[in-house]
Length: 191
Image 1: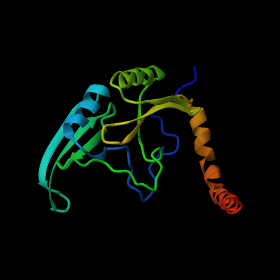
Image 2: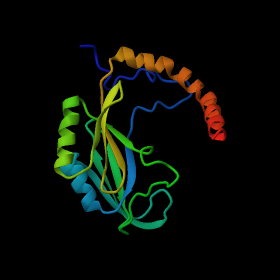
Image 3: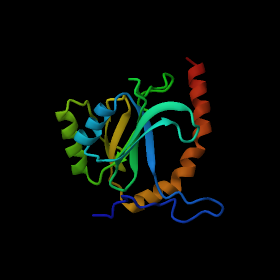
């Protein structure tokens, strides 16, 4: 079997002159409605350990008074998924102008078997799951957490050579964007 591209960079392989090297994600933070239900979902259903928690009455960066709990679940690579509980019962809200499928957080698992195991666990807990979807270079499932945040679990399936080809073609694909937008405008005007 060809070597898989799991966690092997193909575009960001060397420092860029004049830029700080960003090595990875430290944490991604969301607002949650209730810390207890969020903990249950991420610890008991997804299996992520609670790794850190803090409570502040003032925001450290602005000193704004806004009591909150900030808690972190650790991913296997040492990065974190974090949540803020502002203790007001309000959670994450979607932008009504954006389709629900656009904004989502994709987390990586290491095999198709792990993806199937996660899907089974989610279904056992009555979580609606879409997929397994084959994107031709990764497979994934989609679902919502109790805060309304769309999540994706993904497993890379492409060999590193295919990923290098995607990198080499990325600029070409994006160069077609303006022409596609003009085509869509013409199609819309013709209706």
